[in-house]
Structures are given as structure tokens and as C-alpha cells.
Length: 494
Image (cartoon, rainbow, N blue to C red; front, side, top):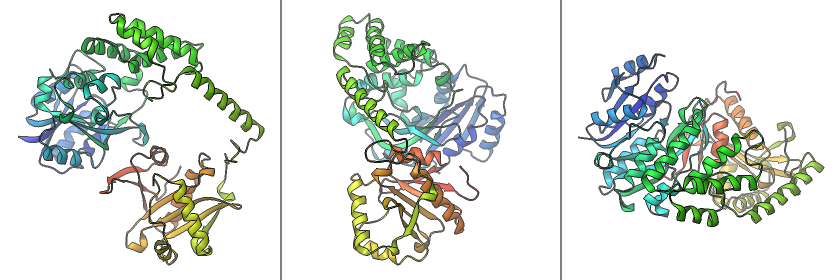
């Protein structure tokens, strides 16, 4: 029996399916079997899959035998003779390191029954958009977290076939939340010790208007409410707020999140309506559970007095910004700074004492060490100052230091540059980081380099959002936990 089996349900997704299937090839393991279940595609998807399996014998294809997505997954699982299971929708994909990490973990730890990791949303082209909110089983009981917080990314979840069968498997009568219902049912059969959370990104969910969850969001919410009530006997505040915010925003006169008080009324009313079969629980929600300010999944639940205080601060900042359109606050953070206004000064034009002071400022402003391309000490500085092909610059705007940037790797014998960029706090949020990166890409291209790479801390979501906008893609996960992103820069444009 092989270790892991994955089902790929697909129908009419010719623009995505090859990307999804190729993402399963990143792990060259004999322990993997894949079954593609095509729901009767007519757009060329079936032909793409048929050609793909010709050169990949551990991939099998069946077509036209299912009654929808949930049924396709159930059929695929019934055909897999593997110890572990998972599924990947035809428009999603796994990250390059995902399967090797998953297989290593489930092979090493015999006591686990369910494994899951992080994920992100990507746009229709497959570039990083934002983090997928993922619950952490280390912070509480798994079944309680599944009810209260819901969020695990479906392509990042894998489980033993025995657990799948014991829980009753996929509910083929559901159209939208059969994945969530499966996790909820499984949570009743496992202890926390049998659930393994991998704090690394494993998969990407594409987000675009035509997806089933985007185009039928209200139907999804209704199905989710019924599922929670059936399994748990109550509806969680996260789901209630998602419903109430949807209903609030669907009213023509209500702009999303414009009025905390109106949203609060919608929320409290739905606490009662959706939990009317559990009046004691509804009472608790009405009197003791506040509304989340930004949305149901953000976790920023605050009282109304704090909201009013924050709103006053926002109005004050807005008034200041209107007095001077070039700045957003008293620290004079520049909103629009062109490359023509920036000076790129090589490090060897500075005195050593000045560079040491700049390096110290970088360390002081980067307490979590998100920017860590090299050590910031005297010995490293001496090496940098003798660089032959690698490039290091302090970026200035008049007398202010904007940032520190570098292109390194050629002196160490690599064929491409590694890019590093640090922007001082005063200039963050100004859009200057994107301009500096584009400038470095052009400089690397002028040196004959055709690919550029960079390393990023997995939790640095601000940086990852920027890299996605600039068409970088996740390439590998280093042993030190940093993600390596790459981009072909020959002829690259923004």
C-alpha cells in the first residue's frame, strides 16, 4: 500500500489544470498515487489530462461518472488504495516543497491521524494575494477550534483513510461546505495529539469571480449555518458575523463596514435568529460576544468605545493629511517619491563609522529580523566593501536615508542575483519599496542576469504581497525556514 493518494476533481478548467497537476510532480516519490476525476469537460480539459497521464504512470484518469464535485471526490477516494488521502481542486495548486514535507512528516510520526498546514490566496494568474487564515491546533482543542474559527485550507489538509471512513466520508448531498463538514466530523474522532499542524505554506487557493464560493457566497453561508447547527447544535460567532455582514452590505444604502452600530445590530439580531434553537447560547452571544471590527475572520473583536476612539484618531490623521498632500502624518512619510529623486550611493563611498551606524539603525528597526541577508557586524562590512560583482547601496532622498538594497551572489559563484531590500520606517507605506525592487531588477538585467531570487520569512505577509504583485513565485523552502522566491527578469515589465 502506498503512503499518500490525492484526488483531483476537475471540470472545464483548461487554464488551470496543467498547473495543478505539475504542482503534484514536485515530489518525485513512489509513495504517491493521483486520480483525476473529470466531470465531463468540454473545453479541452479532458484532453490535457489524458495527455498528461501518458508520461506519468502514477496518475490515473476517469471521466463522466460523477454527480458533482463532492461525488467526484468520494469516487476518487473509493478507488485509492493508500494509507493517507487528500484532494486538490483543478484550479488550486501545491507549493514546490509541499508533498515532500507532508510525506516526510506522516512517515516519521506514526501516531498522527490528520495533518494540515498553511496556505494563501492567489489571483487568477497564480500570484500571491494574501495569507489564508489558518487555525493553530497548538492553541486549543481541535474540535473547538473547528467550530469557533473554521479556517483550514482544504488543499493543505491530509488524513488517514481509516479516519476518513470512520467519520462517514464526504457528504455528497452538500455542494459548498462538504470540506468543512468533513473536518468537523473528523474532529470528533481525534485527540489533539493525533492532529499535526505544519506551520509552513502548503497550498494556494485561486481567487476569482467565477469560483463557486465567490459567485454563490450566500448559498455557501446558508449551507454552512445548517451544517454547524446539525453537527454542533449551534452557530459560531464567526459564521454569524459573516452572514450579518453579507446581509448588511447587500443593502443598497449600506456601504461595507461604514457603520459599526448598524453592523452590530445586524450581528446581535442574527445571534438570536440563527441560534433560536439554543436560546441559552444565543443569550451568551448577545450580551458577551463583541463584533469584529474588520470582518469575521480577523480576530480583532473590540468594544464600541474602542471603535469610537479609533475613529476619532482616524479623523485626526485624515485632517492632517489634507493640510499637506505630500505627507500622511507628522513623521513626513512621503506618499509619492519618484526614482529620479533617489540617490543610490555605493557603500564604499561612506566612512566605516557611518555604515556601522546605518547597520545599527537597520537592526533597531527590524526587531523580528525579517530582513536578514547577512550579519550586520564589522567583519561582514569588510567583506561587503571588497565585493567584485555584488552590489550594495544606501538609498537617499536628499539628506534622509530611505533604505539599504543589495544584489549579491555572483561573487559566491551563483548564476543569478539574490535581491535584498530594506526600507526605513519613515518611508514605509510610500510605495518606494516597489520602485526600488524594479530598479534593482533592471540593474540585474543590465548585468546579464536572467533570473533573480530573494528569501523571505514565511510570516512576512506584507513583503509577500509585494512580491506577488511583482510576479515573483515561491520556489523552495530553505532548511532555516525561509521561503525562496524567484522571477525571470528578461523582458519583465510591470
